[in-house]
Length: 80
Image 1 (cartoon, one colour):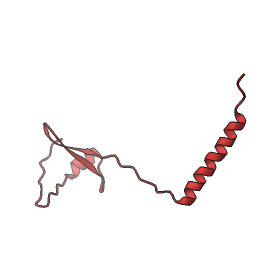
Image 2 (cartoon, rainbow, N blue to C red):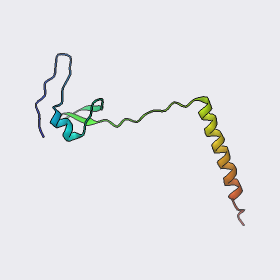
Image 3 (cartoon, rainbow, N blue to C red):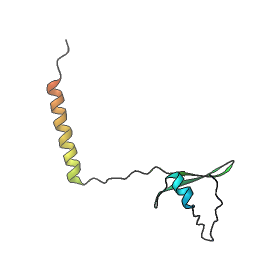
Image 4 (tube, rainbow, N blue to C red):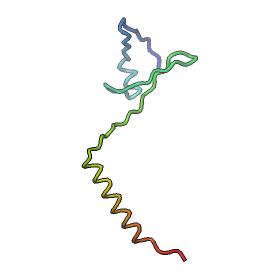
C-alpha cells in the first residue's frame, strides 16, 4: 500500500486511516523512524512497561528466593 503524506511546518505527519488499519496501528503506538539508502523507513517500536519495585516488594522477592534455596537444598541427594 502506498500513500502520499504531508509534513506540517511543525514536522507532524498524519498516517491515513487505511494505512494505520492495515498495519494495526492505534493511537499512542510508537514508531521508529530510520533513514535507509532507499529513503525513510517507519516501523513499529516494541515498548515494554517498566515496573519499579518498592523496598517491601524487593524483600518479598528475597524471601521467596531464600525459601526456594532451602527447598532445593533439601531435595538435593548426595553424589557418590
